[in-house]
Length: 83
Image (tube, rainbow, N blue to C red; front, side, top):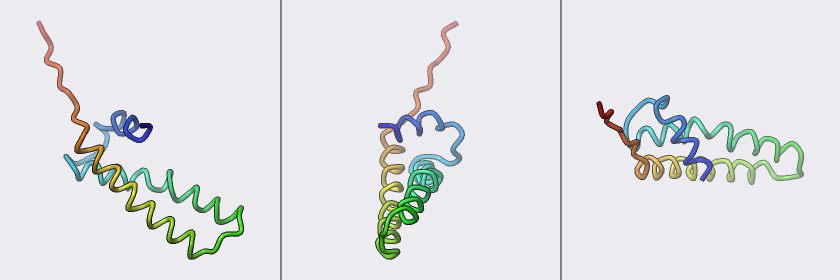
């Protein structure tokens, strides 16, 4: 829900249209939502580097799918001003 809300808030600032906009949103979210936590996980816990790499790549695919699905579902309504 939070990712969809963030997409709605940033909708006009993300370049592109349709699914491309969603994929770009996913790429923009990736460093904040995946790379930083995974780096922290690797540094603070005794986890194999290969496992962290595997989880990080899996999360890249997952967040790209989230962005694509949200972009398909979300359509900004244009309200016509009534004069």
